[in-house]
Length: 133
Image 1 (tube, helix red, strand yellow):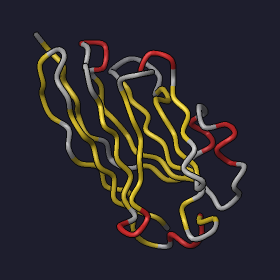
Image 2 (cartoon, rainbow, N blue to C red; image 1 turned 90 degrees about the vertical axis):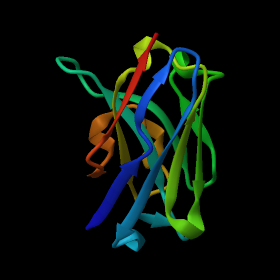
Image 3 (cartoon, one colour; image 1 turned 60 degrees about the vertical axis):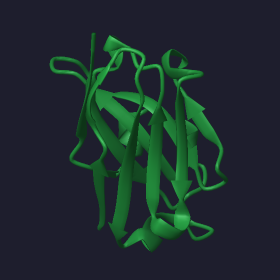
């Protein structure tokens, strides 16, 4: 089993920034490729709506993101700390959501369908981001 714990959420004004973190622990080797979790991603969800993919990064440090966060959100990882980050800049009210960290592996190809919830076996408990004026 792999455990994921997010942190860093909070309330911010429109145009502000937040940085989320997700620490992975447990049997990380079970989903690792070349010593790193094969695929990690951030999803978000608002009440009454489906959980949606935001951004993902594979073991080769290649990232993919949805168009709505292009130029504003950046994903990174510190493999030595088993930590995934999400830097969110120029936040908008529509970014308000519960943000979830997700992980999958060990195949390096698993990130090929990063936008699908079903790709990910492991999830964190979520951290709330609220953007207001």
